[in-house]
Structures are given as structure tokens and as C-alpha cells.
Length: 223
Ligand code: SAM
Image 1 (tube, rainbow, N blue to C red):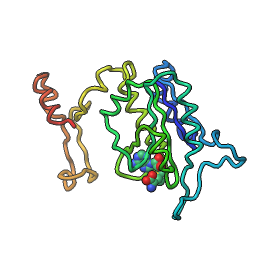
Image 2: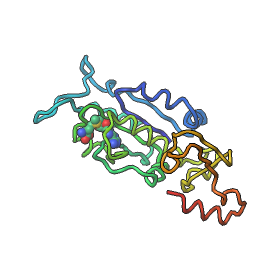
Image 3: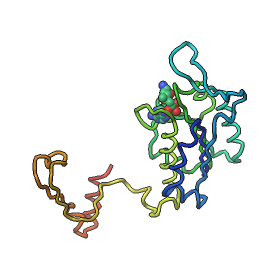
Image 4: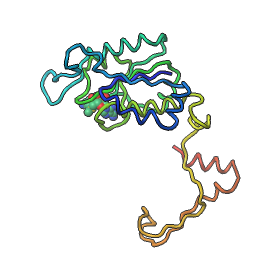
């Protein structure tokens, strides 16, 4: 699976890609992540990727030409029709785990990371296959969205997780040692707030060894 990211801030990704499971997946060649500098697809000496919006208004908008050139070049490098071009936008379709599962079957994902006032609408209409939002809030750029999607899609790939079941399981409440944890002070939220000492216990059912009951409890405490 190959991720191609088009960005004007390539350095944002270095720490993200060099730590933990993602860096292992890259070393094992389970995934390939290539960062592409949008300005490399410009032709003027200033490497201009943006312009003022038609009709007036503040800020700058990414131009269609360099993005079109970048996407055309990156698509031609992967000989597969299992490829998708994603534009990130707060106005896009909401990303979720179902999409992550679906996209994990692809060979290539090309991400277009916008900045400033966004991207010329012709990219959404004619260049991207899908326009995706990662939530109802506005980020400074698409890079954080790209990282979130890379991580969630990669988790769906066989052999990415240590425990093969982890990615497919429901997410439920979890506890670990100690079984009993006493807290003094007033840092607790809610009911404990007024008390000087509070004993926080692991729910008894999880210590019972009764797996049927544990499964029931987990279902009741999952997303
Ligand atoms: N009004 C602009 C628009 O509707 O696209 C907002 C531009 S935003 C400041 C700059 C870039 O950040 C966007 O082009 C997009 O790539 C990215 N972005 C911001 N919020 C996002 C979100 N919730 N999901 C995905 N990408 C987002």
C-alpha cells in the first residue's frame, strides 16, 4: 500500500513517520509513504502554488495547475487502478473506520493537503475522487488529516498491529494494574471532587474470570 502526500510543508511528517508502528510498517515494506513538495510542480521562479480568490476576499487559494500536475505524475507511477485521490477539506464527507477498512484494500492513496483559504474548487470537482473531512472543525492544513487517515488505514492492514485482532475489535473501556488505586486531594472529576480520599477500583466482573460476563460487560462499555 502506497501513500503519496502532496503538501507545502513536508517536514511536518518526519516525526510521525519515524516512530512506533508506522515506522516498523515502513521498514517491513508493509506501507510506503512518500511526501511530495507541491512547489516542485510549479514553473515560475517563485514556485507559486497559490493566488488571490476570484470575487475578492481574504487570503490565498491553492492553484489547480500544480496539483493537477502532481496528481498526474504520482498516478502514473503506480500501475494499478486500485488508486484514489483524496482532497482534504472541512466541507468534505466525514472520514470513519468503514472508509479506513475500504481504503486498506487499495494499492495507492494520493492525499492533497490544502492550506490558507483552501483549494481551487476545480480540484474537488475534477481532480480528486473524494473530498474528505476528519471532523467538524477547521485545521490550518490537510497534513494532520493525512496523518490521521494514514494511521487508521494502516491499522486495517494485515500484520500492521502486534495483535491481529486489535484493529477489528470494538473499542471498549479497559483497566490494568493496580486493582485498587487510592487518590488523595481534589483533582478528581465529578462525585469524587468533594472527598479528600477516593478509592478507585477495577470493576469486579473483569476480575471474575467469567468470560461470558466479561464479554457482556465489554459490549455494554464499548463504542
Ligand atoms: N474555508 C476553507 C475550506 O473550506 O476549505 C478552509 C481552509 S483550511 C484553513 C486549510 C486546509 O486545511 C483545507 O484546505 C484542508 O485541506 C485542511 N482542513 C482544515 N480542516 C479540515 C478538516 N476538518 N478535515 C480535513 N481537512 C481539513
